[in-house]
Length: 428
Image (cartoon, rainbow, N blue to C red):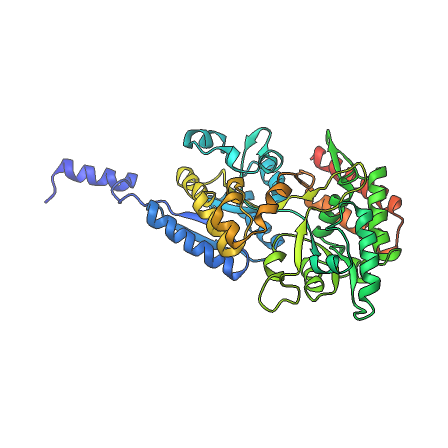
């Protein structure tokens, strides 16, 4: 029979729930992508758990970027503790930051001795900060590049890749005219002009290379500017006047359609992301060992510009295991993990110091040229309501490319609409 004091202690223990063994916190890490990417993350969290003793549950998300964003917004908006750690497309960062969903990282960086300088500074400063506070770190960096047929430039005596957009047009016309004698499907330049996010990236690169771009100053968005009208007119002329870009540019051309056209041997130049390199160089590719890459051209008095893309990692402000989450985040952005991402998946690391790694350069020699491009990446407008702005601009740009509206009219309409969106957001 239990004595009075022991019985009282047991009752108190039961009431307070303090007699049960303490449960280990389990982290939830949200990732998506292709099967090979999911397989990589499964292996990675397994290694992390064995090394740290922290259990991690992988939350598998779809490949589609919009579905992935929505899959994070719902639990974050509801104040749920899971997921603790997640990957984010760079264009989501402004929304997630402004909503207060991301845990500040600056103090943890300082305490742990992890230096910001190992990452691309322009990426950190333009994408990963919110009101001066670091809220995410880059895992995978992307930027627009110019792919070109080295063999065809040599065949026609052309001196390397074009520096300016005018040179690109001249080279394209010369080679296209000659190549069409045997290949009627050949075009000078293929790029992303369909009505989707890739069109924003392509337009920004052309516009900013001549002093324009989608500008945000003091909350005011400017799109209808002389450099932007010139850039959009130039892109329209590539299709309708010079005819060095296919008529399907504004109806079908996204990343894969562009890559496939170039890889079949049907183009001299291609604007695409770095992922296309390994596919162009793959076994059986008609353009294998015939391709090289360069920074995108620019207008006179301008400079080459590449749109910032990629994926970043952050911690939920509502996580109930923030110290453990930080340990996982550090593991994800470590030199060892980022090197594995490069060698296994061909991902472009967020760490700048890996672009000099001898093993990576031996396996992926084009990485040596990526670092300079990534030092000058330009983000899309950093706005919490960017998805709404993007939808409007895509539609108006595409209308100009198709010939449904003159460039100035399309840009003026886009500017009026996005300013309405901005006013609504600011008054909410």
